[in-house]
Amino acid sequence: MLRFNCEQKTFEISGIKVGGKPLEQPTVLIGSIFYRKHKIVQDEDKGVFDKTRAEKLINLQEEFSDKTGNPCMLDVVGATSDSLIKYLTFTSEVSKCPLLIDGITPQIRIEGLKYIDEVGLSERVIYNSITPDYKQEELEAIKKYKVKNAIILSYYPKDFTSRGRIKIVKELIPKVNIFIDNIMVDTCVLDIPSLGSACKSIYNIKNELGYPSGCGPHNAIETWRGLKTKMGKQARIPSMASVAVLSAAIGADFILYGPIEEAEYIFPSIALVDAAYAQLSIENGVRPNKNHPIFKIS
Image (cartoon, rainbow, N blue to C red):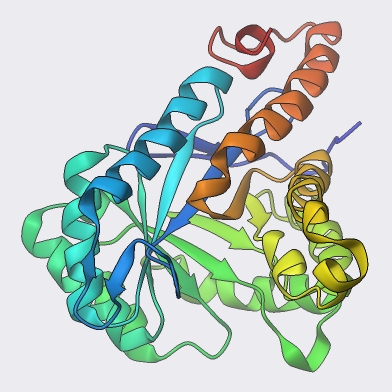
């Protein structure tokens, strides 16, 4: 079960391991903060936000990370370079976890990289993300500012199947691994139909290439138009948990689970999957470390 044909790559970023064998390594969970229309943000352009509430949300994620044994990262989203820099400054001070630079345009992300280099945080950040239509200046900035971690997003509209995803990833990796040591692959979820292809791609990429792979399954729920009207408001939380569990069950090394507020039910859901799979690892003679969910959630 969940056996792959090639050796699985494991990367360590700011003390957090991602990748490897799903039965042994717990899933890394990544919550997004300062995203579009996030209620803690008063001015998206200037980066004005409620620092008290932001710190509470970061602490919430880290609390559930400690409870479950699932490592965590922060996806820091910025609408402008000014706001992104302010958010990176704040998050780097209140948390020690890896930070995803997630500006909404390449130029915003590049300005974020420049700032990160100036303050000496290059080894702690993950560039999110390099797409098939990347700008050359992005790769040049990644090289210039000595960023060694990045996510490849397998968004390929010409062939948005599982075959198309792995094809474009195979094309991208040789172009970016010249500069980047630690590559993670986001198999790209846009809606419910694409979730199936993305999950299959997680398995295929690990099976053929061995790179840490995952996705943002919450997008399937965010774009589900009939969720509230046909199913009711109560359906959202179990649906969010379900798509995250589906990703973990297929072997995702990391999950971009969406708004950080949802940590309190996403972490327990994924910890359950990891604990169940860890038992299979134990039956095969491999005992997970003491901080694995199987030893923490009971």
